[in-house]
Image (cartoon, rainbow, N blue to C red; front, side, top):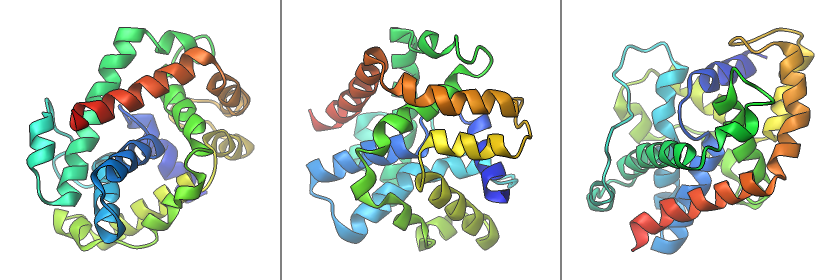
Length: 227
Protein backbone atom coordinates (compact mmCIF):
# COMPACT_ATOMS: atom_id res chain seq x y z
CA UNK A 1 0.00 0.00 0.00
CA UNK A 2 3.05 2.30 -0.01
CA UNK A 3 2.38 3.40 -3.58
CA UNK A 4 -1.27 4.01 -2.70
CA UNK A 5 -0.16 6.26 0.16
CA UNK A 6 2.08 8.26 -2.17
CA UNK A 7 -0.74 8.59 -4.69
CA UNK A 8 -3.18 10.06 -2.22
CA UNK A 9 -0.44 12.24 -0.79
CA UNK A 10 0.12 13.53 -4.31
CA UNK A 11 -3.51 14.22 -5.08
CA UNK A 12 -4.15 15.58 -1.61
CA UNK A 13 -1.72 18.38 -2.47
CA UNK A 14 -2.57 18.66 -6.13
CA UNK A 15 -4.22 21.72 -7.55
CA UNK A 16 -5.13 21.08 -11.16
CA UNK A 17 -6.06 18.14 -13.33
CA UNK A 18 -5.20 14.56 -12.39
CA UNK A 19 -2.94 12.36 -14.58
CA UNK A 20 -5.52 10.72 -16.83
CA UNK A 21 -7.06 14.07 -17.76
CA UNK A 22 -3.63 15.49 -18.60
CA UNK A 23 -2.77 12.44 -20.72
CA UNK A 24 -6.08 12.43 -22.55
CA UNK A 25 -5.93 16.12 -23.46
CA UNK A 26 -2.31 15.80 -24.55
CA UNK A 27 -3.00 12.70 -26.64
CA UNK A 28 -5.78 14.49 -28.49
CA UNK A 29 -3.24 17.11 -29.52
CA UNK A 30 -0.84 14.39 -30.63
CA UNK A 31 -3.55 13.08 -32.95
CA UNK A 32 -4.21 16.54 -34.38
CA UNK A 33 -0.51 17.32 -34.80
CA UNK A 34 0.41 13.91 -36.19
CA UNK A 35 2.81 13.12 -33.32
CA UNK A 36 3.42 9.38 -33.00
CA UNK A 37 5.78 6.79 -31.53
CA UNK A 38 8.65 7.95 -29.37
CA UNK A 39 7.79 11.61 -29.92
CA UNK A 40 4.26 10.98 -28.60
CA UNK A 41 5.72 9.32 -25.49
CA UNK A 42 7.90 12.37 -24.84
CA UNK A 43 4.98 14.78 -25.08
CA UNK A 44 2.64 12.64 -22.99
CA UNK A 45 5.13 11.99 -20.20
CA UNK A 46 6.07 15.65 -20.15
CA UNK A 47 2.40 16.55 -19.76
CA UNK A 48 2.23 14.67 -16.45
CA UNK A 49 5.77 15.15 -15.12
CA UNK A 50 5.40 18.54 -13.34
CA UNK A 51 3.31 16.89 -10.62
CA UNK A 52 6.36 14.92 -9.45
CA UNK A 53 7.14 17.97 -7.33
CA UNK A 54 4.13 17.19 -5.13
CA UNK A 55 5.19 13.58 -4.88
CA UNK A 56 8.86 13.83 -3.88
CA UNK A 57 10.61 15.40 -0.93
CA UNK A 58 13.06 17.11 -3.22
CA UNK A 59 13.75 20.80 -2.63
CA UNK A 60 13.77 21.49 -6.36
CA UNK A 61 11.74 24.45 -7.49
CA UNK A 62 8.31 23.55 -8.75
CA UNK A 63 7.87 22.72 -12.39
CA UNK A 64 4.57 24.55 -12.77
CA UNK A 65 4.54 27.85 -14.62
CA UNK A 66 2.12 30.75 -14.49
CA UNK A 67 0.46 32.55 -17.39
CA UNK A 68 1.66 30.12 -20.05
CA UNK A 69 0.72 31.31 -23.53
CA UNK A 70 -0.18 29.20 -26.51
CA UNK A 71 2.76 30.76 -28.34
CA UNK A 72 5.18 29.43 -25.72
CA UNK A 73 3.81 25.93 -26.15
CA UNK A 74 3.76 26.02 -29.93
CA UNK A 75 7.27 27.48 -30.17
CA UNK A 76 8.87 24.92 -27.84
CA UNK A 77 10.68 22.35 -29.97
CA UNK A 78 11.58 19.92 -27.18
CA UNK A 79 8.49 17.70 -26.95
CA UNK A 80 9.04 16.76 -23.31
CA UNK A 81 9.26 20.43 -22.34
CA UNK A 82 6.32 21.22 -24.62
CA UNK A 83 4.28 18.68 -22.62
CA UNK A 84 5.36 20.30 -19.35
CA UNK A 85 4.23 23.71 -20.59
CA UNK A 86 0.91 22.28 -21.74
CA UNK A 87 0.46 20.79 -18.26
CA UNK A 88 0.51 24.24 -16.68
CA UNK A 89 -1.74 25.63 -19.41
CA UNK A 90 -4.34 22.92 -18.78
CA UNK A 91 -4.24 23.46 -15.00
CA UNK A 92 -4.84 27.19 -15.42
CA UNK A 93 -7.63 26.67 -17.96
CA UNK A 94 -9.25 24.11 -15.70
CA UNK A 95 -9.21 26.50 -12.73
CA UNK A 96 -10.71 29.28 -14.84
CA UNK A 97 -13.48 27.03 -16.14
CA UNK A 98 -14.26 25.67 -12.67
CA UNK A 99 -14.81 29.17 -11.37
CA UNK A 100 -16.73 30.28 -14.44
CA UNK A 101 -19.15 27.32 -14.33
CA UNK A 102 -19.14 26.82 -10.53
CA UNK A 103 -18.61 23.10 -11.04
CA UNK A 104 -17.28 22.42 -7.54
CA UNK A 105 -20.76 23.18 -6.17
CA UNK A 106 -21.94 19.96 -7.81
CA UNK A 107 -19.62 17.82 -5.69
CA UNK A 108 -19.49 19.91 -2.51
CA UNK A 109 -22.57 18.17 -1.00
CA UNK A 110 -20.63 14.90 -1.12
CA UNK A 111 -17.38 16.35 0.20
CA UNK A 112 -17.57 19.88 1.63
CA UNK A 113 -13.92 19.79 2.74
CA UNK A 114 -12.30 18.29 -0.37
CA UNK A 115 -14.43 19.19 -3.41
CA UNK A 116 -11.52 19.70 -5.82
CA UNK A 117 -9.86 16.41 -4.89
CA UNK A 118 -13.16 14.60 -5.41
CA UNK A 119 -13.73 16.40 -8.71
CA UNK A 120 -10.31 15.33 -9.98
CA UNK A 121 -11.30 11.73 -9.36
CA UNK A 122 -14.66 12.22 -11.09
CA UNK A 123 -13.00 13.74 -14.16
CA UNK A 124 -10.66 10.77 -14.50
CA UNK A 125 -13.52 8.34 -13.86
CA UNK A 126 -15.36 9.82 -16.85
CA UNK A 127 -12.30 9.44 -19.06
CA UNK A 128 -11.26 5.97 -17.87
CA UNK A 129 -13.31 3.93 -20.36
CA UNK A 130 -12.57 6.36 -23.17
CA UNK A 131 -8.83 5.93 -22.60
CA UNK A 132 -8.76 2.19 -21.87
CA UNK A 133 -7.33 1.32 -25.29
CA UNK A 134 -4.59 3.96 -25.10
CA UNK A 135 -2.40 1.81 -22.81
CA UNK A 136 -1.20 4.85 -20.85
CA UNK A 137 0.17 2.77 -17.94
CA UNK A 138 2.82 1.35 -20.28
CA UNK A 139 4.35 4.82 -20.58
CA UNK A 140 5.38 4.57 -16.95
CA UNK A 141 7.26 1.28 -16.91
CA UNK A 142 10.48 3.10 -17.73
CA UNK A 143 12.23 6.38 -16.98
CA UNK A 144 13.10 8.78 -19.79
CA UNK A 145 16.49 10.45 -20.07
CA UNK A 146 14.60 13.74 -20.16
CA UNK A 147 13.18 12.99 -16.71
CA UNK A 148 16.66 12.34 -15.33
CA UNK A 149 17.96 15.57 -16.83
CA UNK A 150 15.55 17.59 -14.68
CA UNK A 151 17.56 16.53 -11.65
CA UNK A 152 15.47 14.14 -9.56
CA UNK A 153 17.14 11.04 -8.17
CA UNK A 154 16.66 7.64 -9.80
CA UNK A 155 14.79 6.48 -6.69
CA UNK A 156 12.39 9.42 -6.85
CA UNK A 157 11.79 8.84 -10.56
CA UNK A 158 11.21 5.12 -10.05
CA UNK A 159 8.69 5.76 -7.25
CA UNK A 160 6.95 8.40 -9.35
CA UNK A 161 6.59 6.18 -12.40
CA UNK A 162 5.39 3.24 -10.30
CA UNK A 163 2.76 5.39 -8.62
CA UNK A 164 1.39 6.84 -11.86
CA UNK A 165 1.39 3.35 -13.43
CA UNK A 166 -0.59 2.07 -10.44
CA UNK A 167 -3.04 4.99 -10.58
CA UNK A 168 -3.70 4.60 -14.30
CA UNK A 169 -4.27 0.86 -13.95
CA UNK A 170 -7.64 1.22 -12.23
CA UNK A 171 -10.63 3.50 -11.93
CA UNK A 172 -10.37 6.29 -9.34
CA UNK A 173 -13.43 4.84 -7.58
CA UNK A 174 -11.57 1.54 -7.21
CA UNK A 175 -8.51 3.35 -5.88
CA UNK A 176 -10.62 5.04 -3.21
CA UNK A 177 -12.21 1.71 -2.27
CA UNK A 178 -8.78 0.12 -1.81
CA UNK A 179 -7.67 2.87 0.52
CA UNK A 180 -10.92 2.66 2.49
CA UNK A 181 -10.28 -1.05 3.06
CA UNK A 182 -7.17 -0.16 5.07
CA UNK A 183 -9.40 1.60 7.58
CA UNK A 184 -7.01 4.55 7.72
CA UNK A 185 -7.72 8.19 7.06
CA UNK A 186 -5.38 10.05 4.75
CA UNK A 187 -4.82 13.76 4.18
CA UNK A 188 -7.80 14.40 6.43
CA UNK A 189 -10.15 12.19 4.43
CA UNK A 190 -11.49 9.43 6.65
CA UNK A 191 -11.72 5.83 5.51
CA UNK A 192 -15.49 6.06 5.75
CA UNK A 193 -15.55 9.16 3.54
CA UNK A 194 -13.31 7.42 1.00
CA UNK A 195 -15.78 4.53 1.03
CA UNK A 196 -18.58 7.00 0.26
CA UNK A 197 -16.47 8.52 -2.50
CA UNK A 198 -15.97 5.11 -4.11
CA UNK A 199 -19.76 4.90 -4.47
CA UNK A 200 -20.40 8.54 -5.34
CA UNK A 201 -17.67 8.98 -7.97
CA UNK A 202 -19.42 6.74 -10.56
CA UNK A 203 -22.74 8.45 -9.81
CA UNK A 204 -21.28 11.95 -10.19
CA UNK A 205 -19.52 10.85 -13.38
CA UNK A 206 -22.92 10.17 -14.94
CA UNK A 207 -24.35 13.62 -14.19
CA UNK A 208 -24.93 15.54 -17.43
CA UNK A 209 -23.56 18.83 -16.09
CA UNK A 210 -20.33 17.19 -14.95
CA UNK A 211 -19.89 15.39 -18.25
CA UNK A 212 -20.61 18.61 -20.14
CA UNK A 213 -17.94 20.35 -18.08
CA UNK A 214 -15.36 17.67 -18.97
CA UNK A 215 -16.25 18.00 -22.66
CA UNK A 216 -15.98 21.78 -22.44
CA UNK A 217 -12.57 21.51 -20.77
CA UNK A 218 -11.45 19.12 -23.49
CA UNK A 219 -12.57 21.26 -26.42
CA UNK A 220 -11.29 24.48 -24.85
CA UNK A 221 -7.80 23.16 -24.21
CA UNK A 222 -7.58 21.77 -27.73
CA UNK A 223 -9.06 24.74 -29.55
CA UNK A 224 -6.61 27.19 -27.98
CA UNK A 225 -3.71 25.40 -29.71
CA UNK A 226 -5.40 24.45 -32.97
CA UNK A 227 -6.95 27.75 -34.05
